[in-house]
Length: 88
Image (cartoon, rainbow, N blue to C red):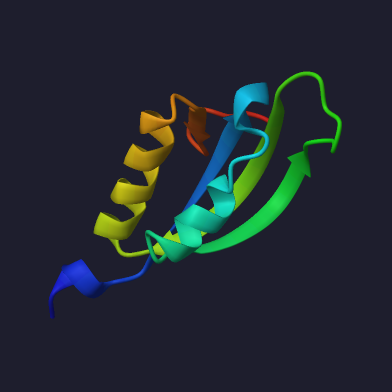
């Protein structure tokens, strides 16, 4: 059986900087990269002055997840995974 079609889960935290508040970041992870995204926690006010963040459970193939993470890096957003956050 090929592992390229195996679905995996990854837990990440994404910091959304103020200049990305109006961008459909989560929507693009779903529509463009085919990921299933479950928002576990978030702080992002409608009139937020500072940065916000999302704790996400993402599911997809390894390639889909890597492409989605590359997209977040292209936006220069900070991303942590469950191995680098101690309060999960």
